[in-house]
Image 1 (cartoon, rainbow, N blue to C red):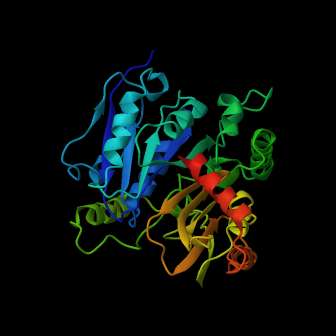
Image 2 (cartoon, rainbow, N blue to C red):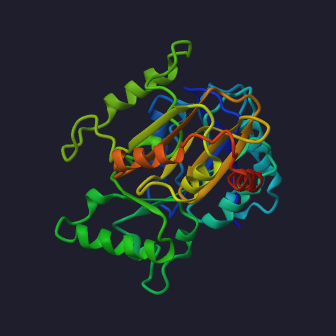
Length: 365
């Protein structure tokens, strides 16, 4: 049994929401999980809480988080893959999702020995009341994949729970075999999970918008400048990367958004949540639907195939949906969003659609 110390650190930069998405960051040893995580921490725009495991080669950029929370929280008993009592993780998640910290997202970086399915279940079944599953990001070393993860027999079951598969270290593949190798890995992923979204990248560079809501383009003006200064220092210290343009951060996600006034038909919203636009990895928004007793509001989130719906006490005057994804056709996605946000007929409320939306809400709890 592997033991160690699980620590919580916080990177401040963003806003507040009623629930906090918790993303599982998984991958084989050496795949580049911590590199990806550090990339996220170095980008401004969101307050990110992180649960990391000190075992092995995990080395989160502590300079971006040290001193920004009054006290770290420890989970005694070690490596996440061997936690027998999930109450330790629940306590950590409850602390990080407390409104006092005002975090936008939490990332749980698992040991390379951890089973993604078990971690995903622990997050989904957490007793922390403000936790919302934020997906499972599985990082793959594209160079070593067939020597470490996949022996060529049955495709790895780990991909069955992955919402986003990051094929990392693409630049290290021989150029003559690069496309063939990546296509072979993607085929293995699709064999297990046809709906998983796959991103190719190098050095852990992915668009943060795929992982969490990017609240701002920069740190808020009332924040201490520590994080932004450290980001600038890290960027200046990084060696030049001749194979990538300056400032390049990997494939960028496209987005489409629609905003309409007044209540909309709930059935059309449910149809969209269950069948998002092509290449849309995330959707989010607020919808106001018509009911026999008047307007009712919901907050909706989609990550891969995961749907989360929660109720709002006060209904805003408009509905708004945003779709985000790599390779997203923004115009086509916008048309889908517009079709979903159709005005609710006042004379005949969509009772069946409302029942379906309420069912999604109950399942989200």
